[in-house]
Length: 504
Image (cartoon, rainbow, N blue to C red; front, side, top):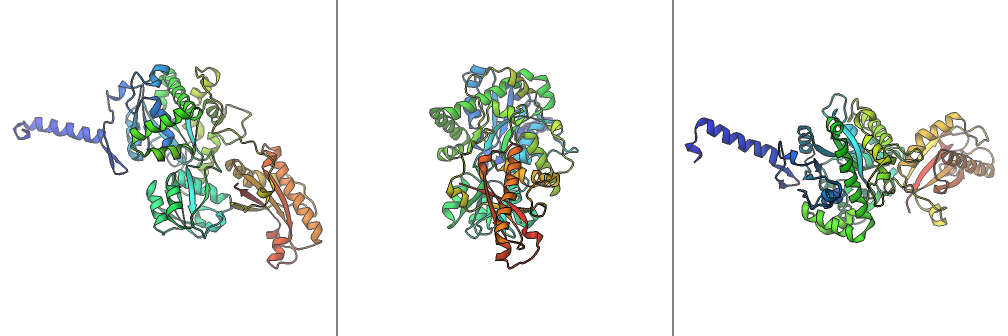
């Protein structure tokens, strides 16, 4: 039949085939995905949402009545919005589709977004306008038995997806022990399960993996343990959405309804156990993921509420935790120092707080929208066993106290704010031990007392600038470490104040 067509007809057929293939097919994780809406097809929806195969998106799929959306869905009946959800693990493919469709919303992991957000890049039109979920244990660093603390990672091989949330978790974890990316050998692998495969093959000492790959590593590699995870730093790896600035400007009311729908579904999932199971089952079927995996991962995610968004976008002046701006700015500097982010756009150029600003004053949401992901943990006074438990990490910092004194001057306070405060705020779900040390000069007993007073001064200052006093365990070692090293006399390297993270 094809041979009977005219030359012009053949060209038309080929063009149609190429158009369908180019816009309707892509490969993700070895699985073919079809039916990407394009052109007039995408206009049938209020928005097209691009997400990867991650349980964090489960409430959206459930609330929308599946990927296609319909007039019987919760989103349409309650909020009047009809969405098309596209499962796309091909990150470059998702970005290309987003660029070509004005009503497309693309997922964004904010901590690694600076890698994309260049002033000379192609995402200058993108605006980050809502946060959807926080990883709370879904990302983890697994390590072999010879790596007991973060300090033990120095010089070791670590499998990691460079420039992604995995890399962000690794870099922040290293910083908690005063290490840099150059202090370890990062083995760059593919995304997702490829990292776990490298670890299970025994080619690396540690790996940054996603749940449920962490459980698989624990089961298959004897002696493996979780060194740290986003359970300890549960506002580090976060997912939200990007929209075109022009679309947001022209569709304020529609965007507000979409955000309300997403946050409503999040609350329904987390507040009702029967809904949680229903949401996970829907996602499992629609995204072809084993239900057991979806249920497991879902327990390690905090789904964002309206209050979380208000906190995250800096609209709550009483909120003392990490904000989106703080995280983005910090990671712009971190990735910039590694040469992975160049001339990143400032926060005001990549974000749009107007939607959340309006919803903070007027919203139709009636279910529980209290803070979840940004909820500040209320610590109880540390129990005795916590005081002596081994630390995950330890960062040594020299603070120049006056001779035989323990007061802090402006320089000392600046050092604490620069070296300690970011770690304490980022690893917001753990106790913190502060140890004071002296060199081996003067009276031993006086040094013991002095070292604890100096450590207490550091803790007191952190409390004054907003950290819960119950988080701290304060100890004084005096000249203990200098004596163990056989160092006598004045030695500045032993006059340190150590910050240790303690996992329960």
